[in-house]
Length: 293
Image 1 (cartoon, rainbow, N blue to C red):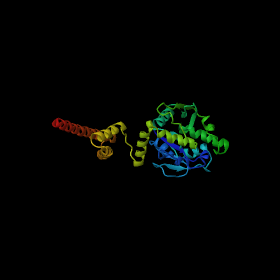
Image 2: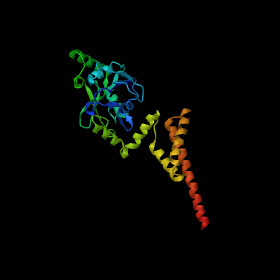
Image 3: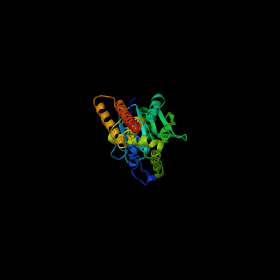
Image 4: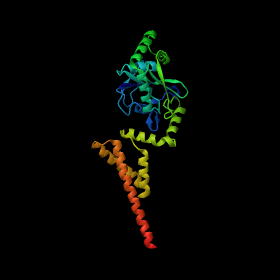
């Protein structure tokens, strides 16, 4: 499915004291980078806002004059796109994920003028949505003609004229529509990713982004391997073994192997070795006990 993405990152963040909100971090990753990670397959990604470092290349633009509101920003971003579908996102969505984006695109491709995410309270979020570009351009042009410009027009002036299919957040991603408008929101997001059930996945994603790699990691397999190495060999063997597994997998992938399969195969071999090592040590210990008896 061919689509472009427009990410609005130029708001004033008034409830945050005017700070550069897209640059604020959650889980040591900028909010904007977390949103970019949710739509890596966009043919063109346009960020409407001031230039800043990003985890992957994007196209920059700005509404004229700056500060004209989300509808003016959307119009500026839309001008830089050519795909039949346009994903529109705000830059402050720490928990937006790829399956949610895919669900929006699928729904927009099948119905009406697009699809919009419906939050747990039943409210539609027009800045977490996928639109048919033709419908979006038509209505934005009509609004600009009617009002003279898009400056300070509310988003509902646009969405009221579009036939949008609601896509409800799922149980798996109930926070996909959560945005960081206040310091309390930011603190809640940071606390959420440090919870026991989320921290490992969040950490692994952060490391992969930092290292510039995109490979499926079977966390349970690696943790089991680390446990076997620590208990069967020595505690420091756990991090050293997982490092060597990663190195071996990288070499295999460089030779053409599937990266995820390379990790799985290297993990299996190392785990088998750790178990054999432990079994040998246990057998020697039993023999010594028998001899001393």
